[in-house]
Image (tube, rainbow, N blue to C red; front, side, top):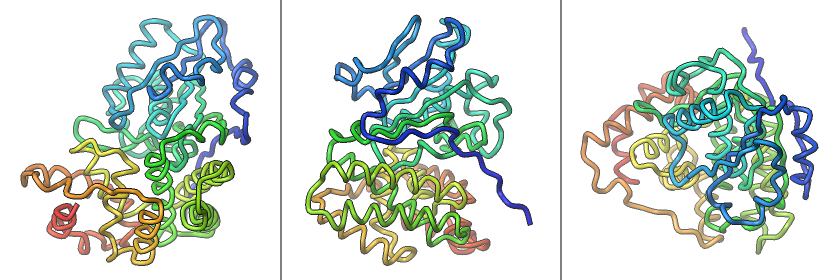
Length: 357
């Protein structure tokens, strides 16, 4: 039997105010006058955080519009712009939620690998290490800070660049950066973590490595969204560590039905990942009965509205497009339903599920 030998993030800093060490962390990785490039979630344009970014020399801030999930053409355009302007860069730093961090990982890889990022959507297709890359989450839940994937929507599929070259070289986990996140956004990304854990812990790929991280992440999610009456500073710290542990849990296992179905939604409708998972999870009693019951309790307790009827006006051609993307996520289905998953999740069954969303 062959065991997975997976790549983890090389360096981790955790703690309130740790963002202030960014200059000190970047300095040894600067190569001559090649700049550090900061890909910053456009949410922070004009906000105080920008004044704390330690710019030197030719360093550049690029605001990334994360209204929609990252696309391969967006990655290719940023990489081409940087190559044209600078030739080479010292590093890419992603500051924001999962989309900003995924963009940073992908741009880092496309600074050194030829062609389009669409060529690398799949498993272990990336051949060259990217440039130095740092992930700084300002939302907690996606696990993008630790994962070996960067999820991208390409011309024909929504699929990650899954490789050992993808994980960040360095992450900075500063709970202060998440404290002003909008409540809805915080909930949706927090639920991304909760759903990761349910899918990982109930999947066929589960082992003690995944279980240990997954159980801890689930415990922290429950502390934040079930046990507490109101959000506090400790909640920011707990959810940040839940995101980290949840990401580590799926590194050695996989996600499942909610993620596989939500990939179809985001490919066709541009539905953002966290909210997409919530829309799907609302209808998965058949697969995760206890998890869905608890999920619905958390939605109600935290006064969150989950959108409904988003597939009401779609054509059969559009349903087919979503089904194709979803069924392409083979490891997710196998983790959720076992090796015979194709006999269980037929096109007809998936069409009926999409019809409910």
